[in-house]
Length: 295
Image (cartoon, rainbow, N blue to C red):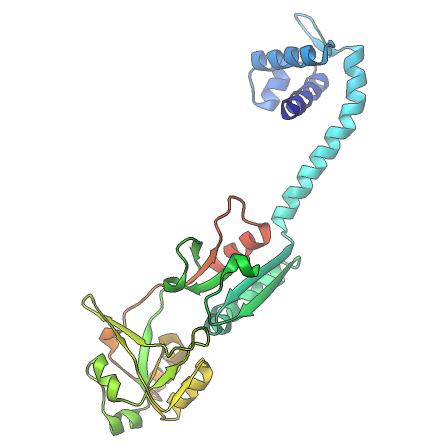
C-alpha cells in the first residue's frame, strides 16, 4: 500500500504541475484513463478531494495545494537520492576481496589490476595469493580467479582470459644429453622440474591430451617447488625439463634458448575465470572489476 501511495502521489504532483491529465499521462507513460482512475482511488483512500476537474481543465484543490507544499520537497529529495545512486553505480566505491594463485597474480592481475585501480579511485582491492582452493563465502571473499578447470560448479563463472597452452621445454644441451621424449610416458624416466601444491602438499602431475586420449604423468626430478620463477630458472640452467605456460617461454623458444617437445600432446585448455557466489545483485565494485577484466 505504501508503494502504491508513493506512485500515486508522484503522479498527482505531475498532474498538478502540468494541469492536464493528457500531458501528465504522456510524461508518465500511462493512459489518461488509467491516470484518472489512480487519482480517484488516491482521493478515496485519503478521503479528500485533491483535484478540481472540469471538461477542459484540472487543478489542485485547496487540500491538494496544501499536500503539494509538503509533497514537493519530499519528491525532490527522493529524486536526488536516486540520482546519487545512479552516480554511485557509474563511479562505484567500496572493497573487493579476491583470492587467486601465484601464476595468475603475476601475469593476468599484474597486467590488468593497475589500470582498474587508476580508473576506479573509489574502489579498494584486497588480493589474497594462495595456491590452495578456498571457500569464498566462509572466508569473506567476494570473488576468486582461477583457471577454468578449477572453478567450483556452484559458482557463477565469468571468463576473463583467452585459452592457454602448456609446453614441455628444456635447453638444447639437456635434450641432447638425455634424449627427446617421443611420448609423455618417456618423461617417467626423465629428470623434470616438478611443482608442489602447498594447498594439499601433492606434486602436480603433467597433463597431456591427444586424439581424445588423456594422460597424467607423475614426473620426478632434482627440484620440486611452488615457484614458477624458480622452476623456470632451473629449466633455463639445464637442470631438467619443465612444463610451463607457452607464453612464459615464448622469447626463450624464439631465440633457441629452450626447445619444446611433445607439442602435439599439449592442447589448449580454458583460461582464467573470475567466479563468485550466485547473487541477483552483484555489488557495484565487483561488477566494475568484472567488466574491466573482460576487456
